[in-house]
Image (cartoon, rainbow, N blue to C red; front, side, top):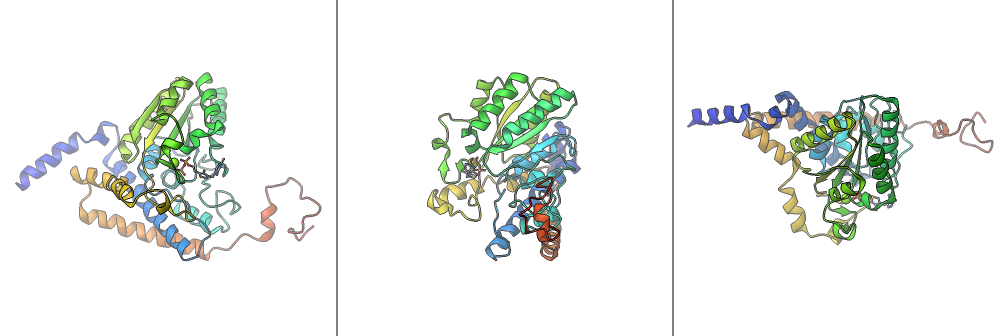
Length: 353
Ligand SMILES: Cc1ncc(C[n+]2csc(CCOP(=O)(O)OP(=O)(O)O)c2C)c(N)n1
Ligand SMILES: [Mg+2]
């Protein structure tokens, strides 16, 4: 019986989906690591908010499969990323560190996204070509088309990925961005992380069509639907979109169907607009579970190894938490740096004036 199981596992491994897609065993385990790390970091951020350690948190819980799948399909520090506020796992997969993200959460000196000027979850790193966003929903989408235009103009082989929720597709910015990218065949991947809600508004009140992907046709680009809780599937779809963009065939709209099992933000109470049964049903399709089941089925992650991953994640999260907690706040005069070329005369913040 044991021999049978080993034989079955070996056969599954040979045909394992990630291998057929060109991902090594180490890479797929690394994907699991980032999904898990993001989840544990995110959970800690919720706790810190409830302990009044930090002022605000907006979470990527539930979206990690989509984001890590997408991140692995792109070239770190080479392709451009224009994320939105749920993209913590994407930021991690592309090279931002838990310390970076905790510094932003605490608003401490050294936050690479904005030098502690922005709210948390405005992910950004100049070195990694991650463009920090604005708070109004969907503004990053036409900016990503602009980056796509610049890439095409310069003739480089970069692509740009931008992410947004399905609620964001009701904004004019979304339609203008896709129209432009469609006309000029820009190397852009539009990734909609469809979690079924825009805060308390359910999808059927956000748009008159069944799928966000249906909207691609109106702008002359493919609209692809993917299970957003299946990181390997997302990897496949985003990689295809990136290859298409690099061949000069233009943009792709990808809709990753997923769910946000937690409230919209630290300031939301989701019990007012959806049932607990609905939330529990989605938790059964959680991206961590899905990846664990897959890795287990091909003999790559047994219980013991999974516990080692958990212990390592806790260590990394503890370290980032302590690091940011102990870090200094920026000096008051830093608030005006990189805002004006010349400080306004009436400025009282800068003691040198
Ligand atoms: C232009 C604009 N309108 C409204 C808001 C308030 N707001 C912040 S997030 C959000 C919901 C967006 O939903 P969706 O695009 O589906 O993304 P999700 O939060 O579900 O990931 C809203 C209405 C905003 N920030 N900007
Ligand atoms: Mg949404």
